[in-house]
Length: 132
Image 1 (cartoon, one colour):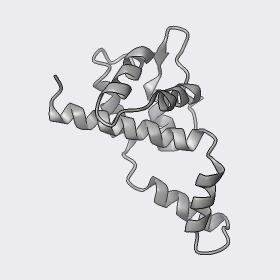
Image 2: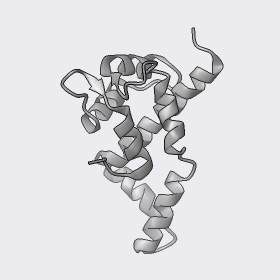
Image 3: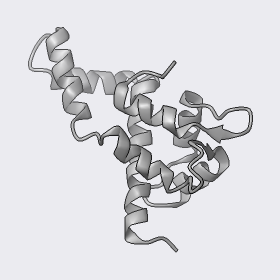
């Protein structure tokens, strides 16, 4: 059904969406405490930036992430039907749970036509804030 390259792209999209969820949604206290325990001592802004950079190390460039999403958008419209991406995330590669998909759509809701703006999503993944 899918070749190895496409399967790898599915995995990357799934992992990137999960990374965005961690950055955009409330984090559980246990997760925060675990992160604080990783610090060598008191956390000042410099240590925070260092730790944050370590968590983001290895994030692909925006173009790579866009190319992964473009597999689902052969017409190059810049958006994907939310139902379709939900199905792909829950049935292919590193599968998302229903809760993870719901969290993603809570952070990045589809538009009134039911489309996910993946270009904006990719921008947020690589820049940390939404485009105007």
